[in-house]
Length: 106
Image (cartoon, rainbow, N blue to C red; front, side, top):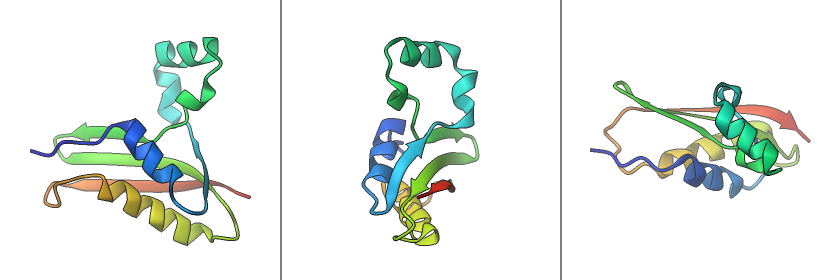
């Protein structure tokens, strides 16, 4: 059985990718009012900016919304982010879907 990395570990992996300038909150962040309110009260909006991980019967799905530095190239940076995420999973046979959306190019 696969041991999935945490959202924090996946977010850290994306932040290490050359050309990735930021990680943006997933749209689902508004679906978790306690987490959102807690981050707002503690003025820690960075806690909301993370990779989104869902594990279901059909495997894991990871979605990252990132900003990229235009000098690095958006497609290459997105591909590198997807590879960094996939590398954190230890079972090559388990289904894994990685979605990287470029939200901002600066």
